[in-house]
Length: 103
Image 1 (cartoon, rainbow, N blue to C red):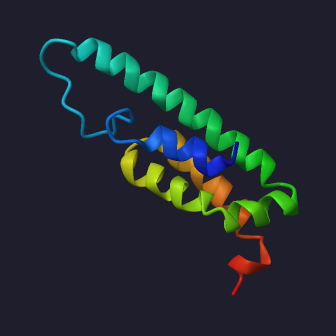
Image 2: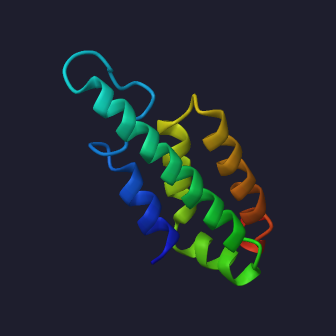
């Protein structure tokens, strides 16, 4: 499965509860738990992509498949989460070594 598929699945707005989600009312605790699980999966998925980006062939494929767009969407949705932003920026720094990104 391409990284873009993983990221797209996790950024689907009805599933991925970004930082602006209201946590008041019935089900609020369940939503907080879901947000925590989604956050954990996002961190692991981005770390996986970062590890794959070490190999130049995978970096090229990430650029070609527009996986980076999904990572940027995650950064926009989770803009107040320092760990997600750190992992995403580390991935972007690896992908930036691709010649097509150095234009």
